[in-house]
Image (cartoon, rainbow over all chains, first blue to last red; front, side, top):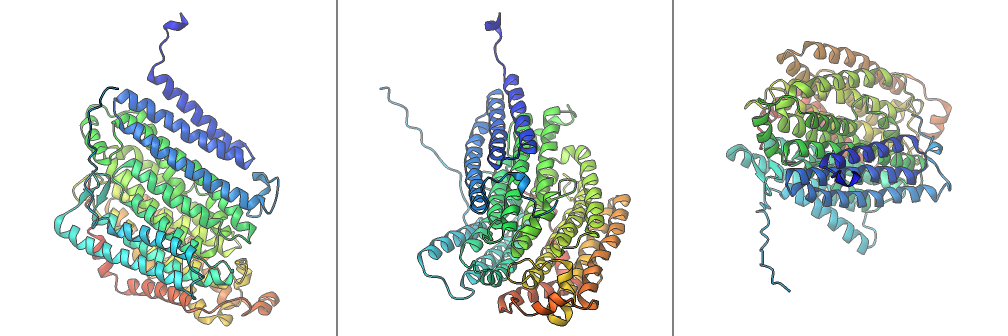
Amino acid sequence: MIADVVPTTTWYLVLGAVLFGIGAVGVLVRRNPLVLFMCIELMLNAVNLTFVSLSDRLGDIGGQTAVFFVLVVAAAEVVVGLGIVISILRRRAGLTADDLTELRG
Amino acid sequence: MIAQPVSTFTGPEIDWYALSPLLVLVAAAVALLVAGALTPPWPKGGYAIVTVGAATASAVLAIIQWQNISDDGPSTLVAGAVSFDLSAMFFTITICVAVALVALLTDDFLRRQALDGPEFYALYLVAAAGGIVMASANDLIVLFLGVETLSLALYVLAAADRRRSKSQESGLKYFVLGSFSSAFLLYGIALVYGATGSTNITRVVVYLQESVPLERFDALLLTGVALMMVGLAFKIAAAPFHVWTPDVYEGAPSPVSAFMASAGKVAAFGALVRVLIVALPFYREDWQPVVWVLALVSLVVGSVLAVVQTNVKRLLAYSSINHVGFVLVGIESAAHRAGAVDSGPGVPSVGVYLLAYTVMVIGSFGVVAIASRSGDDATSLDSFRGFATRRPVLAVAFTVFLLAQAGVPFTSGFIAKFGVVQAAVEERSYAIALIAMLTSVVAAFLYLRIIVTMWMSEPDDASVELAGAGTSNSWTGTLSIGLAAGFTVAVGIVPGWLLDAADDLTQFAR
């Protein structure tokens, strides 16, 4: 029964959309800067999954090439983000996003 | 072991000369970083002069390419990944102008803050290269790489004032919201890829040309377009995606705020034109109302919320949102004839507006950068009381920039606003043209408020005490503001050459 169900591309697209949604909600509700980064990474990797499944469906290599570019960008983004967090934590340890209130808005 | 057939990889043909404006900036950034790391600190202004030299060289190369394109027509480079047309060159020149003016301001600022080094300048150059890639991308993935190159450099720049916690707070806020919006843009690109089978804009257009008459409603594509517009609306800071702007502009070092408000927005608008006007003209009935609403909300939010601000940097941030509304009016009017051979007056009016806006916003933030004293925190409206008696020349320059932003005749701001509204009227978008003019009246109030504070209020005790203390008089900052003020007035009086140049921005390579 269950073994007869073959995953189709649509499954992966839905999974990608769900992961992207989890990441987006996470950015909006979580307060720890590191968790915020992880949520953004989750969003980018959800897009990677979408690229690969669409590439498979279209029979086109372009989508899989795009994933490599996205991976590099994601890595660079983490480097910059962690650099900023460390420079803040040097001043104030145990910081959460709620403590950043010097700029109102 | 089975012997594999040897396949030879042939890379795309690269026209290095056509890419030279971009390459000069990247090479200068690398050279600055390497040389700066290996040599003792350079004499006063050294890094800034190299940066200005690179930006000027790049702009001159772009002008030479402009002639070539005018003669030979637009084309694409690097196997169709980068477009080589007048629009790309115009945005290149605008971004180079921004780099040169901001680099001159930064020299003065970094010395005062004791932060001098090559890093700021290298990041400006890298960000400019990313911006140029955005504005000349002919492939959505290339566009995304440009967005990230620009944004990553800007995140670091926003947080670069190590001694001010506000700067770091703004850097983190900008980083989180910026990468959040980049993810939306990327998801949109993935969905458009799925719907059209390619990320190359040329192939997307060919696909849509064939498919649109058959199937008008493609949910995957429409979702992708919507997500891309969300991502780009964050980048141009159009309301209601503007919430990060006031905080980031207030917290970032003042010259960096100038750079983000000018080059960052120009590049994002270049990308928006590529995505909407060049890649998706066949879906304009779907995205045009969205642009209309974004323009309306930006115009209203930018002008109305600015009135209640008490910090000049936040005030300028809200006024930049109002300017975004004006540029979106230009894009809305360009939408009427998107995809036609002659795309009408919309895109030229956007180009003129962005160049004029770049110069006057850098001038405004430049005056604030010089006036903000050591610590970069004297930016409240009260600290500008009696500014005209303390620094009369700077006050005159600031008045020119503010009047230009308000759209007073004989300044570049008037020419810019007039062009956009005229384009909207020509395409019969009367409602949005009327709203734009009404909000510019509201916005004029906030500019006049700064001018009145400078010229007519008595300085309070604190600012008398601080008068002269910690402010600086360096020729680089003065030169930058002088050039910006000169340009603003010159274009206001003799606008013909700029309008003629911009009139050619109607043909795109694809």
